[in-house]
Image (cartoon, rainbow, N blue to C red):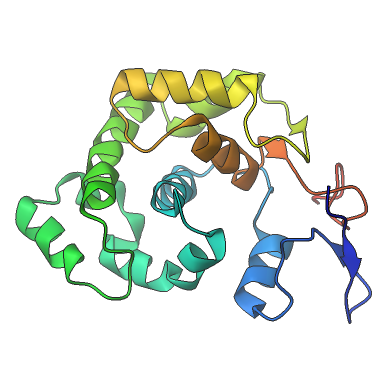
Amino acid sequence: MKTTASWEDGKMRCFWANPQNKRYVRYHDEEWGRPTHDDQALFELLTLECFQAGLSWECVLNKRDGFRRAFADFDLDRVCDFTEAEMDRLMKDPEIIRHRRKIEAAVNNARVFREIAREYGNFAEYLWQWTDGKIIYDPVSATSPLSDDVSKDLKKRGMKFVGSTTIQSYLQSVGIINAHQPGCFLFEGNLT
């Protein structure tokens, strides 16, 4: 397993946080792994994780502003209403990842996300119920029994591009799984 490294500011960070990319460092320090209960943030991160499948997270993160613009700031109801014409428009947008199946999946997943939110009162309730609201510490796994179960349930409900590896990454990004590495200044209970 790769280890953390000390940086110019004296903080130790996870090995994957690219010190040359300030956006990536800010994401690591201020967002990744922090317990998230806001449905709009949960929707945005799920959509971005689905686009990340087969690519690097840094690639997706570098296009995040373009995704926000293209997907109406991840306004769930607006994305649910996207038409074929709007998906065609997105295929021509160089500021996002232009992958037809992923664009279609994003709109489809928005509709399923909304159904789940209606069923549970909000999507956060659905997501956090898998761990009874508890954070799991796991800095090494690419998949887990938890990501297997959540992935299976989301697929059964109709979501696309939500395999176990994608869902493990998603659960890490929204703080259900704290995957900051030992030595990182955000490891375990340091997310305050």
